Length: 142
Image (cartoon, rainbow, N blue to C red):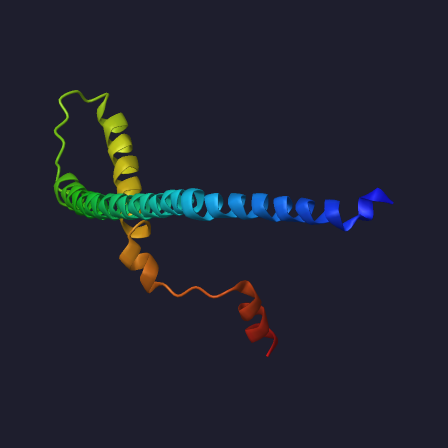
């Protein structure tokens, strides 16, 4: 068999190994450093973008907390103004037939205002202690 002849097999093995070694050298010394630089630059870019995003999130959270503080302050001011000013208003009615309608409307308004102040007040709501109905039933059974 001519394929197994030692004279033809040795040059084939030599050229095969030499071509693979050549490709290995080119790959290791030329292409791999370029690929590593690309990977390093991508990693740095990712880290920079991540830091930029974190800084943006911090700024947004700071602005949001400041906005919420200002809103709470303004709502408290509005609540105190409504409570102090509107409860001390004395209406003067010039026309007698409209007096009853105005009194009825103002009473409805004042009742709604008092209920909103008393029942929508977070301090009052937080001071109330609620317990589930199941606990009440258990207390009744005992």
